Amino acid sequence: VYEAMAYQVAREIGARAAVLEGRVDAVVLTGGLAYSESFTGRIASRVAFIAPVRVYPGEDESAALAEGALRVLRGEEEPRNYA
Image (tube, rainbow, N blue to C red; front, side, top):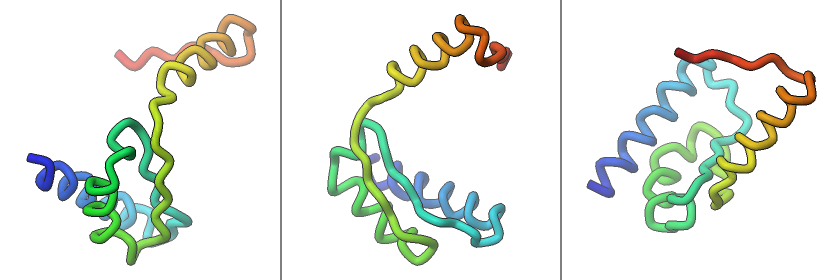
């Protein structure tokens, strides 16, 4: 399952690179799974030809959501409805 997930992530990165016509500055891997060198290494080995691979492990999703809510409450940004 682990190998299949890394393969799928690499495949999606390749698809996005194609849409961007190869104009990719870097491939950035982040989140909790980025703590796994085995996982990020499997992805990097497949996509490093596209652009340099940068790994920033960590789960900053909650902080990003809180900062976004604060911007809406301050009137700095309009809320978005994704439904």
